Image 1 (cartoon, one colour):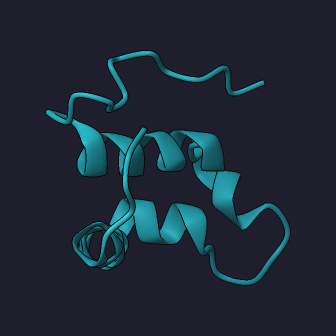
Image 2: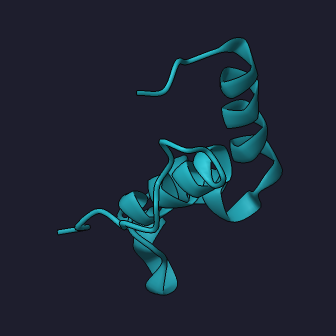
Length: 70
């Protein structure tokens, strides 16, 4: 299991605020289907990107097992 710490909390905040694609994918601008407009990725793909940022290299991390986006 992963113990959630203040460091992980701020790493998550930093990952969202420093990566424009993740930020816009998770928090799209108002409008119909804004997150998938022009072929954009599904939110699950942005969640996976956050997982990789936070847990790559961690012994209990993502381990390259991408979740099913369907």
